[in-house]
Length: 371
Image (cartoon, rainbow, N blue to C red; front, side, top):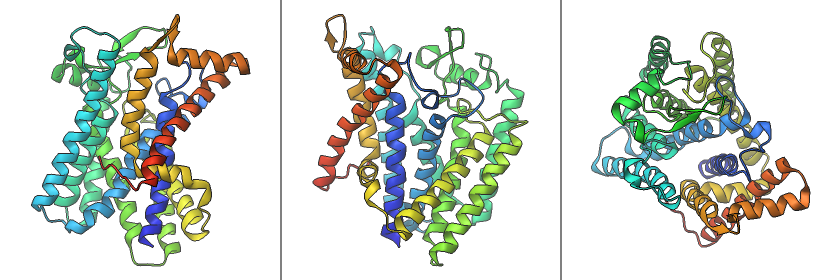
């Protein structure tokens, strides 16, 4: 069952990376269907599930990858951990630098954004791995994940953590460590912007708990018991997490931009149940053909995420008449379909299709770029 389970995981990873690319690359930011938008502050949309799903999947994968080290800090483990953490983090910084350079920002190193999606993945992977390898008893690891969430909630409550302002403890921490020039500027409902990073350093703490929860689900998948029993265990866990998150959301709002503890619980609950569904559909029912494209994406997920980021920037800066190449393609789609929202979605799907051709070539050649 090991390889079959990994097929399910690849498909889930592929679905997630396709979602990440789609929501980051509309034809225009002015015309986006509501489900493809992030919640402005508190709340949850389908788009808000994409990034935490990938964080959860990383935890599941770590259960398989770290099992061979058997909780021993070998040289190979430390080397792999440091190498992957540094590469992921630097790739995220590179995407920020590349965008600044392409858009002609003077002295880009003075304005480069230090944190971001890949940087958050790097930090969560690093500290999650260290905890998993250091703590032998699963119950103690569960306590640590819980304490991280509770401690983070206390920090939010004491530090204006649920206010979209520069006085938010998340923004204050990033400003103190990195400085405003290296922070993301978040949009406010009135169209103004403030220095607030949705991938802030402090809000990375609950992501470690998210990775640990994924790791526990991966451990259940690796058990030698009957597959239906394993899926039932994950289903029960997912339902408990989901309902706990929804229940506690009355006092701790669901909020992706601060990665609130209830956001962790709810998204892990959804991710667990979706993993169960895919495992049942692919591994038990053997219905695998529909997921081929997602499987292809899932075999080189971080590589294609970086490629898509570079490609999106290039399309946005290549001039074509009075617009960019991206704008020209979008305008051409609008001229055919006469609907700005539909055209924006079609552009995103075409962009995904082009990236699919890249990963398909790699897949056919059995080239899997590990990042």
